Amino acid sequence: MRHLIYICAFLVIALLHTSCYRNIRYIVDDKTPLPHQYTDSIQDYKLKPGDIIGINLISTNQEINQMFTEGLSNQQGMASANNNRRGGYIISDSGYVLLPIFGNIQASGKTINEIRTNVQRLADSKLIDAVVTAELLNFDVYFIGASQNTKVNFNKTSVNILEAIAQMGGLNYESKRRNIIVIRKNSTGHQLYNIDVTNRNLIEATQFYLQPGDIVYVEPKRFTAFSNGLKNYSTVLSIVSSALTTYYLISRLK
Image (cartoon, rainbow, N blue to C red; front, top):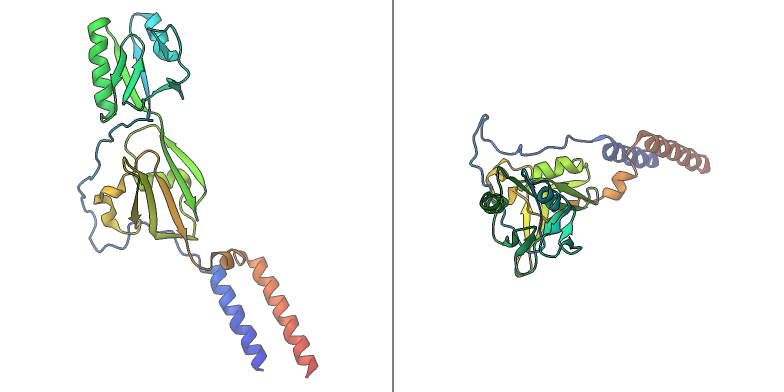
C-alpha cells in the first residue's frame, strides 16, 4: 500500500508540472487603478560610430538622386565598399559620414532628425525642391537565453522592451519575466540593466527603451528541462502506464 501512495504522489507532481501553464503576464503587478497616465521616459537616440543611417534625396536632378540611391561618392565617382552597407552610410570612427555631393557630415552625437535637418539645409543651398529623408538602419536587438536566440531589426529609433519582445514572438513559459537582463555597450565598456516586465512602473523607467546593439538575456526558470519533458499528456500517460506496471510487479513479488 505504501508503494501505491508513493506512486500516486509522483503522478500528482508530474501532472502539476505538465498542466499548470499559467498565462504569460506583463505589467500587471501594480495596484494603480486604470486608466492611468504615465510620463514617457523616451530620449532621442544619439548616433555613434558604427551606426548605419539611410539617407535618401529626391530632387529634380535625377543624377544626384541616383547617387544617393546607390550610395555613390561624388568626389571619387565610384562606389565605396566601406561607405555603403545595407543601402545606407556607416558612421566612421571619427564620427563622420561621407555623402554624395556634400562630403563629410558630422553624425556622431546627433539624432537622426538632426542629421536629416542638416542634410536638408545643405540640399536647399545646392538644389531646387529637394526632399531629404533619413532613418537608422542598424537598430538590431539580440535575444538570448530562455527565449528564441534571435536578432530583431527595427526601422525606427524608438523601440521599447515590450515592442521588442512582441516582435521576437513573445516570452515562453520557461522565461523569468521578473529578471530580464539588458546588456548595453557604451563608450567605456558594457552596462547591465535589470528589467521586470511584470512591473507596470517599468513604463516610466529609462530602461523601458532599448538601444541598437542591446543584448536581451531572458533567464530560464529552474527545472525547465524537467518541465519540458512533461509538456504533453502523452508523456504523462506513459508515466502512468510505467508506474502502474511497476506497482503490479512489486505487488506480485510479495
